[in-house]
Length: 601
Image 1 (cartoon, rainbow, N blue to C red):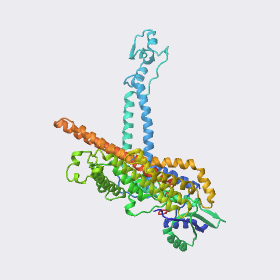
Image 2 (image 1 turned 90 degrees about the vertical axis):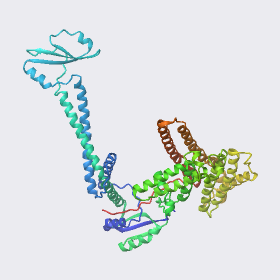
Image 3 (image 1 turned 180 degrees about the vertical axis):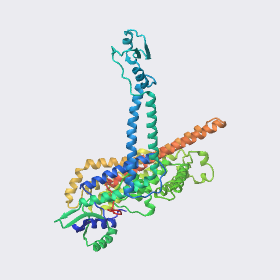
Image 4 (image 1 turned 90 degrees about the horizontal axis):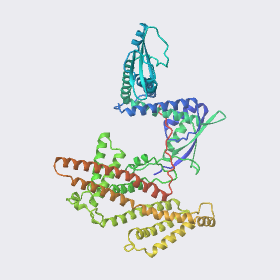
């Protein structure tokens, strides 16, 4: 249920602005929109938040065991600065390492020698000169009494000339003697690598301080929000300050009591159509288990839209069960749920949802006789006693029955959308258009059965065509009957949208057909499981055959499980978020109710 909101205007003394904001934040019931106000303090806070988030991301990559560490924002800042220092040090070390590796590559072609030895020989009158030339140029050089080739290829020759006595200027460009030798470079590379490894070890240890950074971010978010709200408060004659926000109707009394206590002026009114009202959804515990799915999808209904949590839960569970379609897979999900509950030491909404999906999948798999795609398992008692023959996976005629069931489910869900629209639009004339859609959808259902399933078994009843035509007539006449618009103008506007209405009708027809994807994907899941079972059964005997069959079964069913989960996301979620929500007219344009809260300022 989407909680009703009131728009609140709050006026306080300018001299008590900060004090009033603090008390309002402690109350934590008013959602306040923050605008584009800016200040140096706000920019400093945002920069600090960005740095802490970067530090948190970096140590999360390291994956060290987390400790139960709380800490304050100052503690988080200290940890962040330590991490930033280590990261900067590692970056500089990596740059130095890359430079050393380039130097190593340049020196390695001359071999491992100490340039200091050559300098000592020069001081004693023995001059060793290094040259780098092409093969053709080397052949044209005059012979020298003391010349040694260091490295030679078709395109390049590295050589050294030894000159005794007085140093003479060479007749070709000489390679400058390096400052140090290869051994020295290798030693420095090892030192840099050890320092980088030490930094990585320190970062891994700091992974245990994730809670400190996360708690610091919570406190920092409060400071940022406080600063934003303060900047966005309007002033009047430098004497009064005021702001606007939104409060849930159940929290109005709490706000009123605090306003009296603090001496605030308070105005409460219904939000206008132009107001951007936040969405607060409150559901019963059984329905609330679907919330993790919405959180993953990051979808929030608008304040004036529908809360479809209950219907989403029911239909998503049904779609999940049909798509996965295997009681054995449902049992695996149940084991995973139990493991998650034990590991977290709590039965969260996500775990409860997994339990619910598991039991429903096991139920569907049991009545269709599908246990890891094995007919042998399904034939065993008591499993065989649970099978409903018309939809059993082993029944070659079950496909048509399940297709019919998919179309019934789809039509029911889409009809439900228009029933909700009808109730919402009452008592306006526009609501009659929804009755037209109900008539049209029922007529299209018969058309789908006739065209997609079997025209002989499902002949098109004569009244179905009248239902479609009558439905279109009601839609054209009443769909544009808005408040404040005359009936004739609404009628003209509706007739003017004839083409759009016709296309919407075709879309409704295709929407019903799209529910056949439940049958197709569920059939594919069973077929893939059976294929891997057959491959495993055909393995030769002996230990190797048993190991190979076990591997095929584990890999095949594991892959099939992953593909089934992807199918749930692609198809099961789509039918709720597009087909069903589309007929409801939902745009999912909402944003969460996030009251202004202050705990640590």
